[in-house]
Image (tube, rainbow, N blue to C red):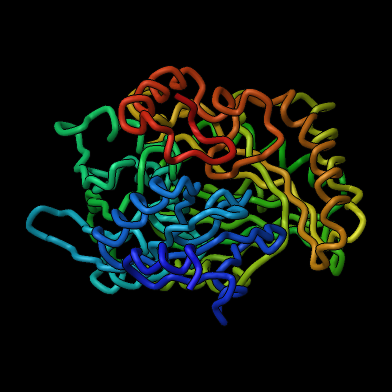
Length: 451
């Protein structure tokens, strides 16, 4: 038996190594452009197992990565020759209707949470992809189709349980370890310890929501420019009950187009009038459906593939663009990279309840932004990974120059001064929290918060 085998015997939980039959599947991230080879993956189902894993890694000088849903865009939840602490088996959910709080273990994914709370008549400000872990989503702020009405995912977070660099279990809320609690609301996952459980304040029950879609097939350059121009003006006075996203895309199979989708906490009659500026654009196809919250989220989730190969990022928009800038934005995707099957400019509406929280009240700084704008390329064959990354970097440089700040849940490895880009003026305080709660820098990864 090797020394590595002996050490692994000291770990508690299901340990997968390169010799395990399921290692190839276990090491995969949702973004299959990421191909990393950890020395071991430990699936933890208790706090004790997490604590043992942290202590074992530090004693053996092994870098740690923390994984729940495995959806980090840049694969920062894995790495070469690291120990991956995977919490995806920790899936307990418990709703306390007396205190109006939801207990969520960190292995719970969006689909499981929606099925649980939706079945009881509740909505929740979670994400849209079914397999994204709720913990990572919320720790990075958390944008979803209820964001403008209910706030970011971190805004309803009331308490969390986190295991620190010494393997100790800490509780963090507004009264206990308050600085740590502040940092975990928008400071990103993996920086301060392994979050094992969270408590969220629940919104009120709802009977139905309206799921809506706006689509333009074979959209011309002029239609895309017109859509963007309406978008940036229309958002300014938008009803808080609406949250939507839109993709201006260039797809290998169908060409150029626009697809927008969102949720409205109101009736079809109301949303029809609100969407009229988009419906009035030539060739617009608009669809509305009144559903339960759970039914709406299941329809949204059904559109996501099991995995993708992609490069993407997201920037915060805090001003309106002139005609030339709108043309330049649209032209970014008129030619795809070699091997790309899909390129897009992605828009995610902010404002509403997001803006009602101060920029320094949580670690999520860019609350005054009107929306997030990102650029994306998707490919099937990883032979084309270099070409697609080079293509995206060239386009990103233009977006960087007309935007302010980057969204931590849409990380980008080529960011200069990444801490300021992700956290704005909150960087100094985040570094202080890092120094206090992880003085040995045990939870260190590319683009982690520095001490």
